[in-house]
Length: 172
Image 1 (tube, rainbow, N blue to C red):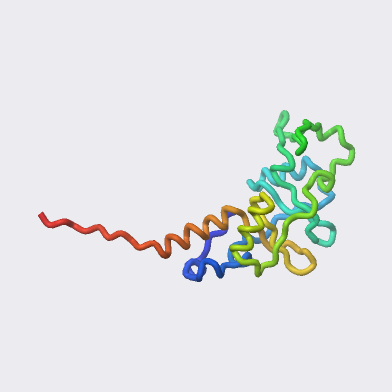
Image 2 (cartoon, rainbow, N blue to C red):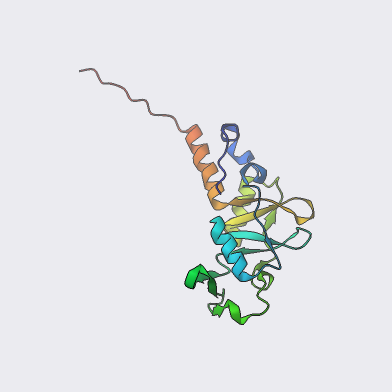
């Protein structure tokens, strides 16, 4: 889901944009007790590459993304294997306790809704990540800002300030 800026945001000072301006919402979350197979189907079915993992109180405790696992579909589209971050091919059925909390990236990178676009970009660069979770009080996810959201803001800002070329007819 890509969030595009409204004309009002495009006219604002680019560097004044915040996470709240750029974030996609609502946030799809994954319960920490969900199985790997269910999580893979949820991400694949939603056509997204990652989502925050939340505990029973809705607090963000991790992130599960395509860099955490890559899945293969077996017969009839059933997810049967994944590649763990360390490169091992794992058969999901071999684990009686295959809850994603054991495979997610813990301690996710998060920001407040007031974080500036410059802060967002710097955090992404420093952490080598492509998405940042935006959390409200008590670590409740309220949005996600992706590198694509930041690039869209750059493109729209550049388009807003770029002088338009006027085609002139040259007299004969």
